[in-house]
Image (cartoon, rainbow, N blue to C red):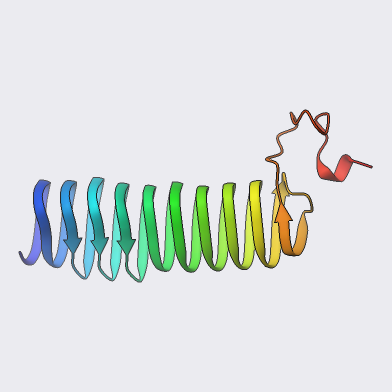
Length: 173
């Protein structure tokens, strides 16, 4: 507990302060204005205005902005970003992930690869293996339609689908 908590490793109940920074966190929670777990976070959650972790494994990252390289659990905030993989839930105004495995719910959802469901006003998937529900849905590959309103279904693309004989939706006729 303090104004600024900075350490290489933390194991215990939690870090509470204005600014929490640690390389490796194992405990229940980081609660602060700004939380940073530079390498690994294993615990219940990070709760603050801004939360960041390279490897987040927890129940919840909750704040205005949540950033992780790999996130396992839920990210809830205005801006949620997983630079590599998001496994679980992203719930916010803007949700961004390189690879989204699970559920993205927001105003704008973006992922290079989706294995799951996107629900939002605008959804984008580089490769869609799942479902998009929104006003505007876009899938570069795998989607039944490249652009659609309300609903889009994807099978993953990649050219090796046995049902379509390796042809994408735009090649079927």
